[in-house]
Length: 178
Image: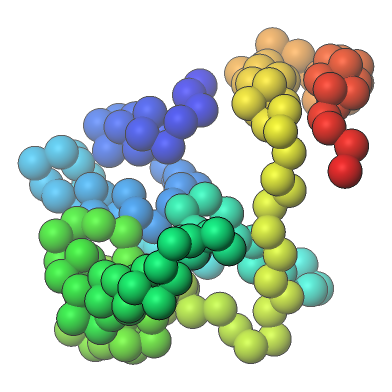
């Protein structure tokens, strides 16, 4: 079992693994026959959802800090970098797609990157951020260790979750109170 996006993608591209959940930024690698023995045989599907459609945003979010020395220039830079022309260039060079309507509705780009329509966030979706906690690195390691024990058959689910809850108590106790 691996935990990082890079490790997961390397295994998926080089071995016979049936499915992978990962960031859209890795899709370009999945298309490359030089590094993916199954290139051309991969499909995409939206994440499963329940009765309420929730879109979680995390990671590589871009913004301008409140104390920016020149917020107008920063905004102009972001408009340039993330604009229609450059967002296509980024995608074509193998970078993660920017969720612009001009990208996800571009038939030529969708033909090469079939996952693009899945980046559209429906207007009915509730947007939430992943929890931002200071102790996340320790939390993540503990959670990954517990899940790995279950997925590899070394421990049953409920005992692993019970042990994880106990392991997380002192970790979460260190979380600063706001």
